[in-house]
Amino acid sequence: MELTLNNEINKNTNENLEVKNFMKELQNALEKGNNTTPTLTTEFLNEISLAKKYKDKLNDIIVNNMKNLSYEYDFLYFDYDKDKTKYYFDLYSEGEIEREYLSKKDDKDMELREGTFWKIWDKNHVLEEEGLKDNVKFNTEYDLENLGRK
Image 1 (cartoon, rainbow, N blue to C red):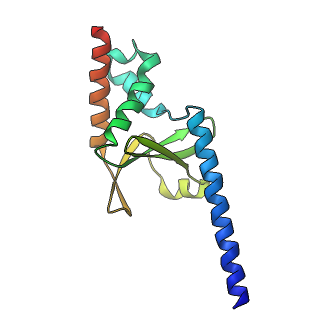
Image 2: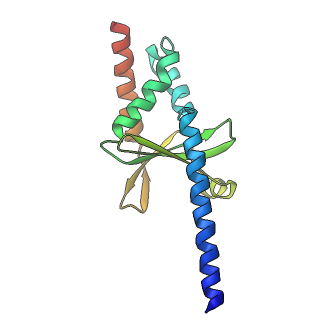
Image 3: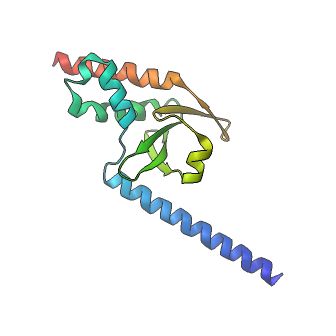
């Protein structure tokens, strides 16, 4: 009985430490403005005519449009962080972003494409959703056109 209790205490302590470390890493990432969308930025630079003209504002517009979309849908965005050399999921929900980096094992097991959107349904399931990217692209193009009119 005592051994079981000790195992549970150690397990809870380890889980709490992992959560604290994740929260610290998340806070550092948010403070550094690390919420970038490199794959989308590159893709939109190639596909939207005004994107090159407003290249310095493009990433901020994309992130803002993704945050706005998160008021309608909770979704994940999968990409690669070149600075940390790790893949990650950004969870967008109610205008907030939470980043979680994948372990090398998870990365190899999942075999996902960079720059993909994943819609959350039933709290335990995700489905790749190209329509979310199309929505962000449409709104980004619209915002860039508005910048051109000013």
